[in-house]
Length: 289
Image 1 (tube, rainbow, N blue to C red):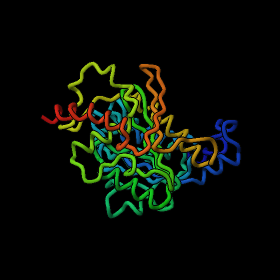
Image 2 (image 1 turned 45 degrees about the vertical axis):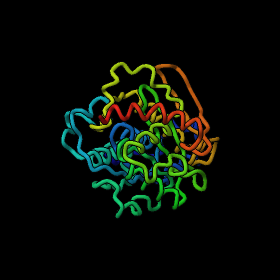
Image 3 (image 1 turned 135 degrees about the vertical axis):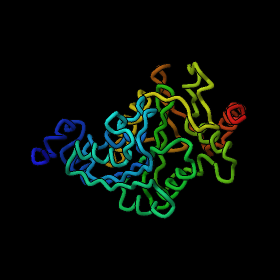
């Protein structure tokens, strides 16, 4: 079937929103996606359909039944299979010419450099609770001058943060170094979602269980994340259009039909963020007790 593939035809319907020259730029770009579950898998497939030609993808986990509600690679056919292996196949089913380098053990301290080597953009899709791994990836991206983005699935919407080279770093914004695990979670929540548009409509609050490292999710949120991420990566790769970088954050919530941009100079040391943390900390304490 690969001999039936033609790159120009496959992605011809992108033309109009991008030029032929821009499509070729996308074709020669390399994107790293860490975490291939809810948002990461959707990011990888969205970027594959955009025509990105080279990927580094990483995940150490296998697909399970509880992934079915939100993970694009999860199905009866993929149960028990490695997520990275399945997503590599899915990307190459879309674009057989795509170069996909798989990091089947995930991203560790010893391979983070290799994972980001030659990459134009880093796309964050790792689990919410993997804060140390996330810090490592964003720190290495920042030191290498790589554009780095994260899109958080929140309720039935999404929040986007962009860390541009030479701008505010992940640590400058979240300020989690030296904090307890519980405080790191609080700061990550506050930084991801300064507007907190999703907090009004959760109907089973006890489903959020930080002690057990689990919480509710929706496919809609993952789809919104993929759309935001795909658009943002396009803008970064092509160098066109404004993209607000941290300390700006954006959140769109489809359920409440609201869009908010927030600006938090100083990140989590900002007085507004300190108020947010006072609200979040008691909720987390209750979850851990």
